[in-house]
Image (cartoon, rainbow over all chains, first blue to last red; front, side, top):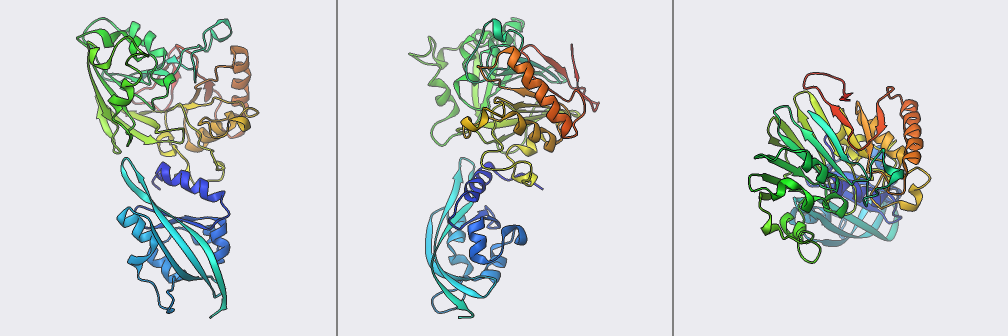
Length: 134
Length: 293
């Protein structure tokens, strides 16, 4: 397995110490880590899931817009951040493994280095939780 | 490949009777490749002695800087070959979005900190940012990668024939993480050190000292040993000794390192503390590394 860039390593180490849910994607948009707080929100620890593509992550947990429909992949803050190299913010719902929907605010920002983009970080703030299947 | 330690101390030169065996000069390692090409890894005060050891004849050499903290560049203006018109020097180092490598080094090699300016150096000197991909110097393949330290900092790996040298003198791989359980690809510097014939690695702090220095960019002894064992380095030299550590204290830390190395399954003689003027020969076609003297 190839070595992760230092910037992702340091980001993961920082995120591991945060109580705020946080997600980390690499330069290809692959979800390479989320912290324990995010695992509590999703109902699944990262160690159980492992690295997954953004498309796969979307199929597992949403996200969903206000109308209940899925948010297009290209509009996800993490995707915008990693593709366009600029921060992005959105409010949407994600569905945890127990079926509960959580409305969250998400801020994503790119990890830019002297050698270009390394990926992006997204931090989630939960604003509301609805019952399973709602 | 021949390797010679010209400066093993970290942070600040610390000459004196209490440091005479391990040495007081700051980071510099001389590397002679299989075709005779010469590299200097870092340019701490140890590079002064390296320069004096070279014949006063036309010389081409490469200086690979891990970063620009003073203990890694302080010897540049006292490096005799830099004051010979026949010498060609290529200085490699980390890129920064803030300024070029030349401009950042020139902050030190300029008034009022220095009696000479970069433009006044008689030698043919050039400055290059290390690429992300591997490149060649003589017969060697050289790789640089960012590692966990304060500010833009590189570690290096030099492969020449079947031998490999990994040089990561300033490194805190356990910052915010447990390197005993992390997956290998998430450990800073791991790919540089993997299965290296010789790993020269930061070992600045005793374990008891580390909690007061978390985030300073250096390793505890236990973290350094764990890193080296996990990376599978065949021989490890701990480096960048704390300026407060006397020879007697370093002897104690060396004994502790050997105990920990053995406890993690390392072969006897596989780890030691670097001493100034220590030499190692890495045969181009052999699996083991032996001290040259």
